[in-house]
Image (cartoon, rainbow, N blue to C red; front, side, top):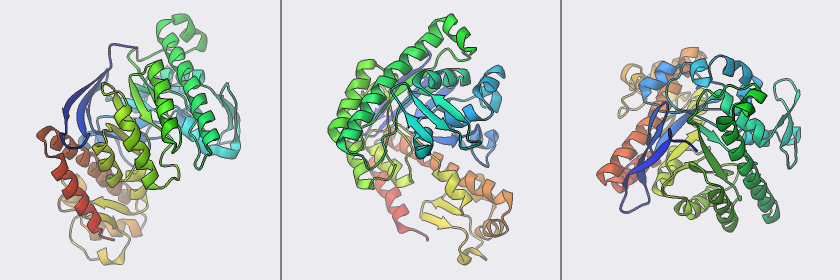
Length: 391
């Protein structure tokens, strides 16, 4: 669709399917495997953009549904697009809004045209279609746009999963056409009142099919026929057993085009990410680092640490002696527990910064080990440390 986006493989592990790559966008380069901190409403909760940059985040995720409701995509577009609005000069991926509408459940009505839903903010009625999702994402100006999809619920019957993936693929074709029209035909963008602020947007298709492996294959084949710059595995981490999730990923990932970026949506724990990288996945996002941080759970090389536990009341150690983040360099567990127990805002900031840094450092170590040919050693050592478990 454009010449401003590209993906190239830099190295491939000789034992597993892990691969290191490089995504080039108009707003910078993303080295993969990559983790995208989730900035739902134009902010990664509790962290400033400077903190994210210093931690090494090369890309963040923005949420189409939430930004559509507040402050409105027209406002963001008038102010120059999402990059300028939130003062973030590095790449941004925006999701399609499909998952958020799916999660509304009883507040939505599905049809061939799209989804009618009620806002969780004020109960007002809205309609989101493939065309509308593309309009919003073009207005936001993200570097990577996700095709509008229906996130298949779990559990689902085979008939329900088939109907869902077929609808998703029809919507994917409409998404591609709409984004192309917005970029190529000034009359289309003028009719919508949208100023396309990023002419090099890339579009990713989303594979559905629940836990039915042949349906996943069918979904992927349909998306490849349409043609996208990247391919994402959706509809996982929605209630299925972890073994079922990895059965799907291990089956479908090798079939995804090698020349395109591969994205596993909404996953997950450090263990999940390392295992998925071994299966050939390049990109990840998850709210877990910041959400768990707000609840007092910290990720460390020795397993999860719940800072609320009384055992840390007098503990002078950093969260993780193996971590080089600013929080571990300066603050003790005792102080961080004090901040949690007194509900100080600084506590959420420091815990979130540590967790996001931990994830980004994990990705850096994986990239390096793939390039050096030591991924298996890294994986075994890293997972062994996590398995020790501190709490």
